[in-house]
Length: 513
Image (cartoon, rainbow, N blue to C red; front, side, top):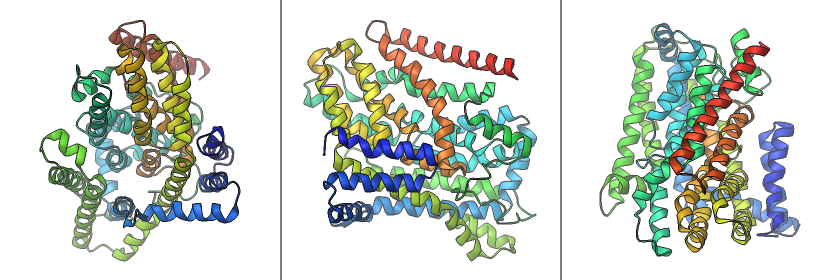
């Protein structure tokens, strides 16, 4: 059943169960089991072996320890510990009180969050987790729901990194483009130039970023986001009271130290940022033959850098804690911090497992073959690639995996049919991958964004979905037009249409209020 239409059953089943039951662990587990049964023709022993292999592969791959995954899991634990120290020290409360005096409105607090997201463009993991630590004290003070915060984080992290050449994503994409151009005999454009020219063609990423600011400015609460925001404003409850096991949220576990100062929060976060970026530069430079900024970010070890930054930040927080002579026991802070991250780790482990099962089923290859076999007008190629990349990212939970499969196909099809559609098709793949990433609960970035915000994962996915769909619809219109109109004109049409939609939503909301 590998590489056939049956290969899309596990991801579809998983998505339906997630929406119907809101039980992410059960839904992911069901998808893994069904996928394993399909791989082994419903042989129970074979399926059990497949499930074990998908779990063991998280920790050991090709006979070697999978240090990347272990380092990322370690960083999540360190982040939980740091968060616990920031709360126990009183730093989070002090920072929140200080910021409330300077940013006096909910609108200002909401606008600050995506601004910080744009500034942290180096890596999506780093963005998702760091922005939450910086913004959460302020958004909590202004009674902004955690679901809204998670949306702001997620919808700036991947969109900004996918259009930034100086980022882990940009370097990875540029590396792929260089190989694709060489393989298809394309010599009149270099990879870096192509990437830069593709930025205004990445309609979804640009639309998603603009929509974040429109949402913050106009206060647009769509779908179930309206419920979360209304509850937060009226009662101060930032989370759904029925949500349990929310990663990154300590609730009232610690009584904040009354002697807490702003630097108790700011200093560890600065240490986290500086140590992580420094480690990324060092690891990238050590792994590069020709040391330049693109080579550094193409070869940097992100997970190791995050772990080093996390260690440095926790050490800084511990020093402040010991100086305060706080009542709370250090070991209790460690343990409570670790416990807050266990729900995120459980979800991440299952997401990696279903990713392995889906890969073995050949879901991505099936969708890719569908594109190759389709006989359509070359002017519609960007639109088709956008849709297929979105579906693939939803089903597989990985933007990078979708890049790896779909970019070569897009380049080959465009080079063989209409070279003018090359860059629009490649940009459409990038755009569709990020869109799909925003719509699935098995995406690393989606999981980490909800973790950074201290939000329930399913609440985050369901509340973000209407915004992602709006940005995707206007982007899809752009890809339908790109075969007939100049690219910059199409971009203006896309962004103008998005602003128009936002104004209509705002006017409708005022009338119904």
